[in-house]
Image (cartoon, rainbow over all chains, first blue to last red; front, top):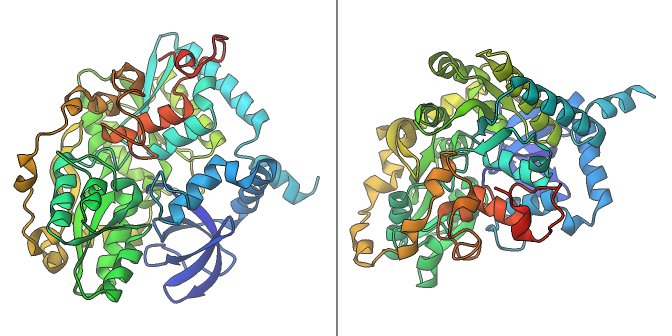
Length: 97
Length: 388
């Protein structure tokens, strides 16, 4: 449960944001993050709550890396993507998303 | 090379060339300490996962012992706390909790066992989903709330967002800074420095470690979770140990500030108060547990339900539990491979101890990724490559 996952904000409606995580879209709450969040921003998500808006300068490069990683391996075989997809879909450790 | 390419090159948190460079630096600095072994502890399941997943342990210098401390929130949730959840579930109360909590053994059974007997247990990714379940249901929903401050702030936010009256919280939340003091003072640990978890520090700020450093005279380095983040954090920490420098260094500035997320802290401490309590396998930790403040008694499952755990104790606990060394593993005294049950009676689909349950537990991670592989050995085979 304790995995922090960065994602890109697609839409903001009040205290609710739609955030994209490697193609999985989730509703993320904004009660905890300490800066205003807008579409296009990157946030660090913990259990459905944004805990930090990640400064944009750092993010493009990081995300490109994730993309590169995904491009290099079959998506299902990518351990990090698999862990995170299962985590944010609320499945237990042993359950497939 | 244009500007964006330069940025790209600078920020390759998984760049193998840079990783190799950092590994070499780490080996050199560890060598300069001139002692064997140098033990450092991280207190975060995500760090252990990244170390294992990216194969970093195999690249670590042999005289550097990187121990996983009590950093898995699932593993340190104490048996009586699991019992409370199980007892409530068996009393017919619907429980919502995080996926990794479901198979954690209590005194006699886990929530999954209770579910198999007909209890209703819902797995949620977020406390917000538990609140939503309560909104859609006429019956009470108890959210079995576990995890460190990063997760506790989410529970706090949900409590403050006016949840429906059939939503209750059974808090087993824990607070990391006090347990670092406990581990630092344990007579058998030889921990010379801590790698602090970047995400918990995103909430608390790195300033929270200053009093610890002053008291314990041990360095702390806050680190992120990419391979380069971790290697860079280790290099910094080993440098501090070499130089006998005692300070807090922030190696994760893109997420961590000195004061942390003040809005989150305000919500956390408005809803929760710290009390002392046991962490599974570790010790009694003063101020290590987070409980709902009296103002939120109407949401507190402990106050609104009769939680009868004694009814569970008619069953005999599984005998194997006595052989489990999860406590020593989380205290950094022993490794999973020191345990007679590891990989035999205790495996991920049938765990004896909590460390084998969660994807953040040391035993589960070692079982999945092979612990401390010795790449110089050609003997092959899973058992053979686990040298520690």
